[in-house]
Length: 448
Image (cartoon, rainbow, N blue to C red):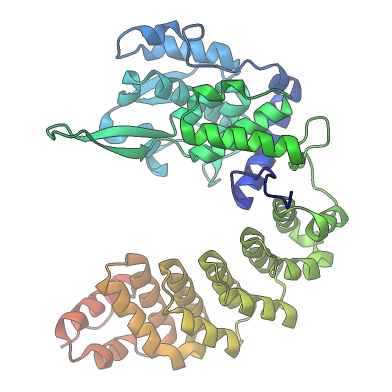
């Protein structure tokens, strides 16, 4: 009655659309029969008898077992144990070679059987994707996709349970002290929803949710009820995959006009990828910038930039975006403003106000955008100098960097502007000049 008991999706629009689109692509890669026939791996003696032995566990034995269960053809792979200071999940992108055929395991995982299984499954998935050229290190979500593939292949319980680890903080305290730390890339709620999609696609009840940590279990059960009740999914077994080929523009426009928020968002992704042939979608994308869903509004503004839409209606949409309640939308609109309308005084004025935004992300976006306007933004130099001061005082490096870059582009003599603004505060003056030199030309003249 009144929709009070209607199941709700446990993840947001962006997360839902990403999971479903990528799930469809991965199922297409390994084959739907594989998804339907795969056996869900559980943390029980039946699957991993070696887990009952005292740690540290034998990584080679676990690798052989997990590889046998996943049945991934990845050829010969090596095994590397990383020390605690360079745990595999915390490694920087420069430290990780995406296509390296080596399973990297953190030393700490040898003392946690579930974390060890999860790490091996995700590493084998990464190698599989890399060997098939599906993702590369340039893809921001490549490591997310590797974890999602592990879910598709039946290791989702381990991926979910290893997403967050509890570590002791103070062993000398009378009271036990601990902290939670992320180990994986996908949040537990997203893994839980992916598991719900896994169960729904296979027409099974997620009875294995009892083996999940509480946050993932809740997302899995709620997601399964939602999918079973609404069938609202971008991936449906037996139907054409949304990721299998470029969909016609007419079909995407229909999704934008009548689809669910996740379907509208996925349609915008596809339109952005078909920019050269998407001129007929301009009006629909502009309308999307006023969507009720924040993720759709945000993506519509990004796609407007990709399409290069410079109509008056698009400018009005960008202006509304700069005033949006969502900081993400405001930041995206700032980028769109400078990219699409390099001579708009109204947008310059609005961007100037955003320099005082509470959100650091929005402030940085506004400063970078104003910098692209160059001398046209000169009437707003005072606000930019205040932004520089804010970055310095709050030790917010991105704001400081953005403000310095903008000053160098906007002011005829940025050093003189700083001297005039902070001349009565020697400490701030010295810091501001040093920051300007850090981000400006190396031959900046010295100040007496």
